[in-house]
Image 1 (cartoon, one colour):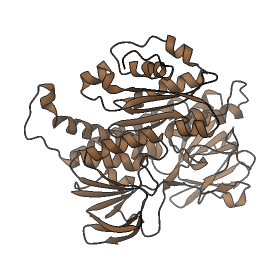
Image 2: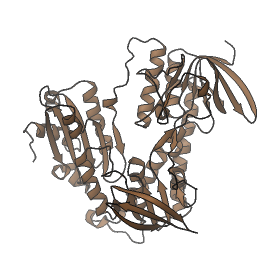
Image 3: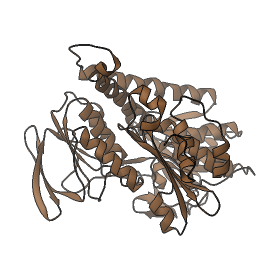
Image 4: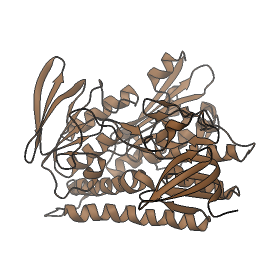
Length: 465
């Protein structure tokens, strides 16, 4: 096979793209990945991973302020923001290098440059003014997404930040305005507040973390406000004045208007798919609200052309992109075991404090869908491990179909819940009923016992409350 001929070409080396390429290689396909920046994409280099490094720093810094309750003492705690940022960047760099190793190990060709569809099965890659043509039976678009820009709130890299500038501040702002309270906005609000900045969050919808269960959202807001974060919901920024070293936002909420002045602002109002410059105008590919339309196997309307990850639409999550990449190439390979993604089983995680995680239907969504439900709740304040950790704020909430015992959804807020939610995702994948979950033995003392108790609570059998 010629060096420019492949079975599969993946455009984009982010989580969805590189996982898709590895699975294709495992299935015996000659595979290439085209990447114009760094392998690992936004998630590894500018999103999931480096933000967690920053949040770990803020978690430790916050703990230093509560040492007395652990019988410890320390003085003159402080931080160097340059060192904090460097650690975050080093973590991202280490993992990006790891992806390069995976490409070599799986004999995947990495092509540097910007790609566009040049015809059916044809990909043109430009680098340094030179264009090279490649051919493949199957082309997978994994080009990700970028921050959505609202008129008047466009990021300028100095006063109004996107996630990139927010992850690499040259100095710690004394005050910060966060526009949008989804996972990205709340994680940055949590980090900067923990590091000492005065933080104000403005959300146009009626509640923070609007995709979460209403009860969890309310608990999260209460926790954030207790930490000193000012929150305005049902509010919109109608104007933004930029000064020499600060911004002033005009905010409208409940018919009233007021101003918020801050050193910096973060625009976190969602993302839009990277569909431009790909040559899609000469294909049958359909775009809906900024994202590529696909079928359940990630195929577009153009034969031989597929889309996965953020560019294929929400939820814009790395693990969703990875799973779509696997589904896509397994379908291409004709595996009988291939199964389309069940979108109700995609867990979501927000790494604020307290952490928030969920999978499946919220209580309201389940009721709106016509289910008669049984709901169980178990507070971490009744969990021995949480009390021992000194982090007992939050709860686990489960939603079951009263008729069948099917687990419809699980909603968690509290210590390390992002490491617990997979238990519910696994239960849903296995189509586990409440009976099997009740019979499962959870180790003691662990946070995971709260999972068991929340299931028991849904059926009036909780032991420790």
